[in-house]
View 1 (cartoon, rainbow, N blue to C red):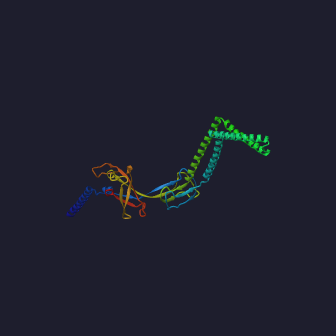
View 2 (view 1 turned 45 degrees about the horizontal axis):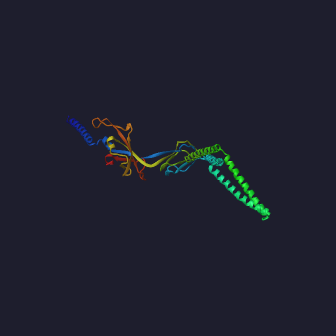
View 3 (view 1 turned 30 degrees about the vertical axis):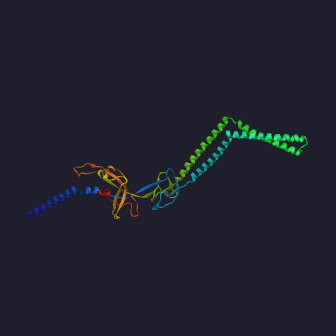
Length: 340
């Protein structure tokens, strides 16, 4: 009977001790829930970028990298065949050259005021020259009739007069031709020239679009990182927008959930200190963003007088890459010390 009483007494004392210890921990905030709320564990993660051909597709003719190779932003990853587009570019360049010839011809047909004025001056100059040569011929003719000059000199003066008359006739004919073109005809030629320029601009726009399309047939790395996967092989067809290469960037980050009270400890751009157990070192990160967490991340707490649902917030922290840090490593953050 005494042994049974001692046994019950021991059990009662054990229950009382556990209850009192639990209450003490709760009062001091040392229970599991509280500890989890002030010390966050997360994993280092690397951003991955799905790289694809923008708006173009075709046959892969070369792959310039291999999987697990480090690349810099702008490095060529692979190339598509450009035979068809090269042919289209050549045809457009020929069409533009032909358009230039048509524009020159249209400009020659136009009657410009400065051309008419220039031709009138040419006619006036030819007339003045003819008048001087006519006076010189008249003098030679009088001297020839008086037997004062030789027949050879007289014939030379007559030849100069004939040349001057022909020159004046040619210049006058050209002026008459320009004057014969009416304003309506001139406007028509000007309209044709403007139309040819518009057609040329359209061809140049098409050429520019083709050259941009050709540039897009060269897939380049958008960020620094490591090639983790190459989807197509040489000779295979690739569709526009379908991932052709996957790049794991060198940018590392980790995320953690905090409650609404802890959120005020963080601001975008703040420095956050974390501990990496694998390296036994502290690392410093920068808060990238703070946003409402998905609904499933909210916690139902009953510790403090039946507290209802507590909203959670997702904090993403960027970490500078180093040779030691690897994706998947654990990061521990003490909230009370992270931003103090």
